[in-house]
Length: 84
Image (cartoon, rainbow, N blue to C red; front, side, top):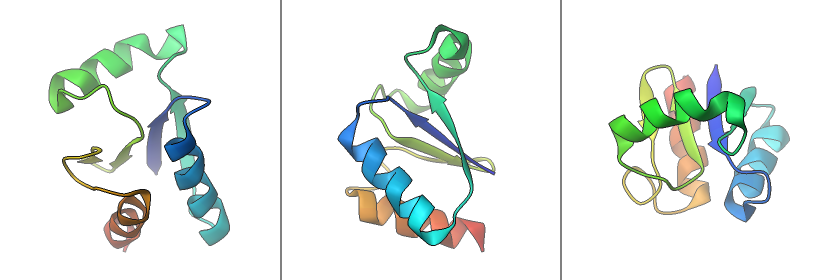
């Protein structure tokens, strides 16, 4: 299962969600601004050292903006490869 760490009004997050939906890729949204996700977001920050979103977790693999991918299309394509 894909975990998509996102913020509600983030245009990049929206773009990635639309690509997932268009291709029928199942994912779980984790809004990092919601208090119930604080602990998970803090742990993720310790690993990634990034406050940027969207961050994608596929299994144990983390895709982090500007470290793992440079564009939303690239993030989507990497995600698809990891799902195979």
